[in-house]
Length: 317
Image (tube, rainbow, N blue to C red; front, side, top):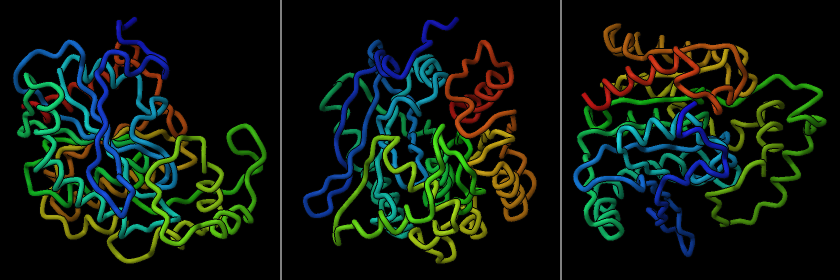
């Protein structure tokens, strides 16, 4: 058993946790969390940007339940610094707003992150030449757009868990998270309560999971996210000039984000950029539903161990 085996309550115990903001809209600050291993040594250290999931409707950067167990030893053995941004959420906002937040985050990352870290831990320096981007579910949406938005070579590799590369959709069912499935009226109930001009960039799950289900099950997700071409990663990648080596983990029976979306995305990268780059988008499909990997550990999971070693090779050279 790994010395880093954790529960959500202890997942961040081996890190110093800092928060700041990378964007301000009116009086609302969009926060970003930073994890620095407590036993980190002075010097330069590689970076991980980890975008959170939640269907672009819920979630928050420092929500430990969605920070997979295997991530803790992965971060610790590489003495990496993890940056976890929030971003505006639908339905109060739309896909264009979210892309704007990604763009602003990357400007902040380049210009302000190093000074903030130095103000907290002066002996720690950031190795911007060794950058990994990660994200689960909606975080994968954010990761792919990050790769398309930044110059070639900035992101050395990506690690994506069941990424949202297309619209959020699912088959309606009788149950959801152990209870009756929300009905179609859920959407209008939420939309009627939106306060014009309200900024929303964080919700602690399970808040609004019922809305996520209703939008995706009753065909209304695009109504609030937007339908402009290029908002979805599967469309935006058609204009790509580069794409980093990427390891995608996806459950064969995922009911929230279809594994076929990841298959189609991998195929699209190869078609647009050539098979050599397409082959460096590795898709690992295993039995399981959405979030099946959250409690996995490498020593018990050979395919995960091999995959993370490949990620480290691409990321750290």
